[in-house]
Image 1 (cartoon, one colour):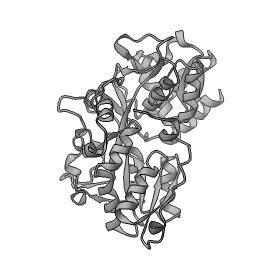
Image 2 (cartoon, helix red, strand yellow):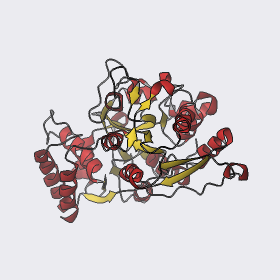
Image 3 (cartoon, rainbow, N blue to C red):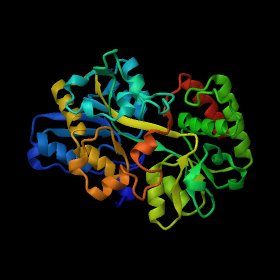
Image 4 (cartoon, rainbow, N blue to C red):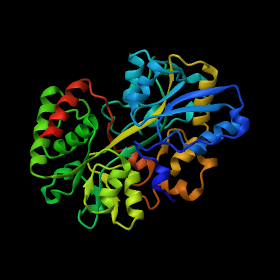
Length: 384
């Protein structure tokens, strides 16, 4: 399976120009999308045009918050949101409920989303677990957004310098003094704090009862004090914010270990560096992205057509090719067997199969309740 940096389109990278056929451009109907570079992708948009003759009009921004807030100031029919920011958008009145009885393949949703856990005896992931927080009624017929693709994040490491038994590492290894000056940590406040809290909890520096996805102000103070201490020791080589930035740092071997995205590990390994993606000893940090229908949507039927298109298999297959999992198992007819085995069965892929990984979700990406305090204290860390 070939995955290029351009194909992956990491955060902050502009989407490629969409060249639509003249017949599609001539159509009166259009759909306005507030999306990201990882889903507003040319093969998916072309297939949508081919099937519907409806012109997509995308606005692309790497920030989930910006995509939600776009609805306040511009015409948006659907927005790409993750689970925590879909709640924010719903609470702000920016989006409207989705009637899942209008979604043809909703019954093929992965159990992580249908039930909140992969199996009845799997851990119930902490934080903004979409399978628990997206529902608007007990009957589970109305949701705040429709999940479309997801992944579980862990630790990327250079096996020339970092040893891992059975490819398993604790989140605490991010703070191992052995790697001082060769560590990168994600540089966005709430997510960097979450990964730091996972590492500190693994080292016993936060109580086992701590919910790392939603720290109290006192716990935030503890994490920031620790991070400032590590920064002054020269522990961090970088606070990374974009896919390409971390790829370059790990390719040059300036960084040996980081809270990385799986596609970063693939890209760096392709460049000849012995980069691996660890099984997270304490469990994975999972995330998902999907679509919410805006409160100012002009054509509700067309919005449901978009959702059904995404759940029909073709977009899920294209997302699988760049390393993500489809939330529905409809991708089969549109995905070659080699890619299917690699992505879903885990053949020659670190971390094993989808089901192996899904059973080990510990936390979900989460927007904390005291987000303002997170940001204030994170800025103190940056300035230290």
